[in-house]
Image 1: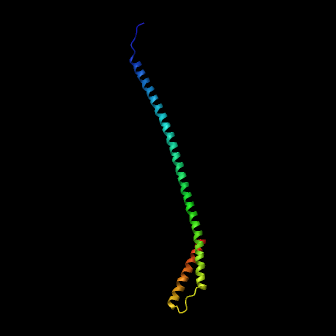
Image 2: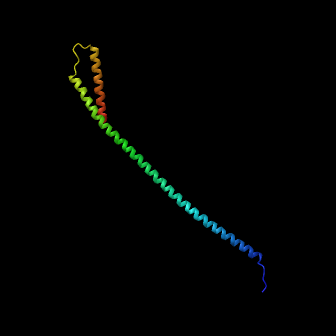
Image 3: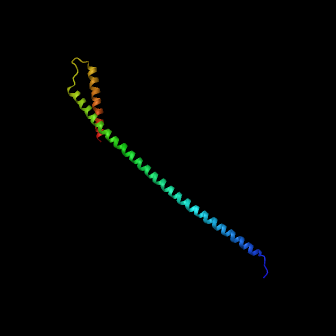
Length: 129
C-alpha cells in the first residue's frame, strides 16, 4: 500500500476541529470565571445591603437614645421648674418689701415676679406634656 499524503479537506477538517476545541475550552474557561465573578459580586451586594441595614438600625438606636435623654432632661427640668415656681409663690405671699419702698420699685418687683411666675408655670406645664 502506498502512502498517500493527506488531502486538503483533511487538513481543513483538522484545523476546524482544533479551532472548535480551542473555542470550547476558552468558552468553558470564561464561563467558569464569569460564574465565579457573579457569585462574588452577589455575595458582595448582599453584604453591602446587610451593612446598610445594620447602619440604619444603629441610626434608629441613636434617635431612641437621644429621645430618651431628652425625656430624662425634661424630668429634671420639671423638678427644678416646680421648685422655682414654689419659691415665686412664696415671694408672692410672704415676700414683703421694706415699708417706704418707692412705688416704681414695688411695681418693678411685682412685674418681674409675675413674669417669672408665668414663665415657670409655662415651663412646668410644657415639660409635663
